[in-house]
Image 1 (tube, rainbow, N blue to C red):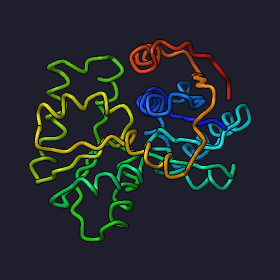
Image 2: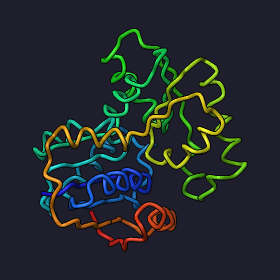
Image 3: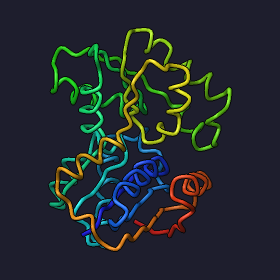
Image 4: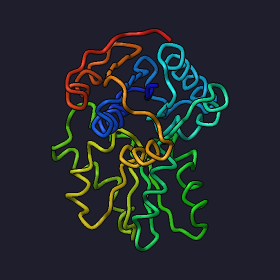
Length: 254
């Protein structure tokens, strides 16, 4: 049985990289819906429709028993729909990230950053409040983080200035733990840690590993790695070379 991963585009490759490294013998099939990126500015109904189509591609074409929704927006809106329709294990990035942040935080003051849609959905807030109703939560959307990552402006003064612009107020409210609520954002971990070294950073792609292990998923196959995308994307190719070792991608139509 194989693991299927999908994202609205590029960012989910951070999840792909982490899972590939932890489970070197697992068969992993990744789909980036680059033709319709970003999901973060779409309606809930559209996100659910696109997510079901991505999941259907993976289930119909490969021997998938676990789907990783490597998109915070899709994880916020479409997890239950995918589980109901396809009857396979489905792991999103929201609940693992929230649980990891709760475990890490010493003062129970947690910050969340993500796309406008993820912040608007309140998905992380709901997940954290389910763990502890009295927890203090601060969140903000960081729409410029994605283009900075996709243009590979990560280690630049531009990146530092934008990080400060979005996060100074958030951090000054006393949060000791920050959830990266978008799969592009792990590429900015170094910059964020440099500016705010006292803050613990939660990368949901790492938290997902424990979820896969808890499911007792069979990860001993042939080590197949395949990457599919729905449209040509220079940003995808750039980050694929960084995060997937230059593995060739194949174009598909949903």
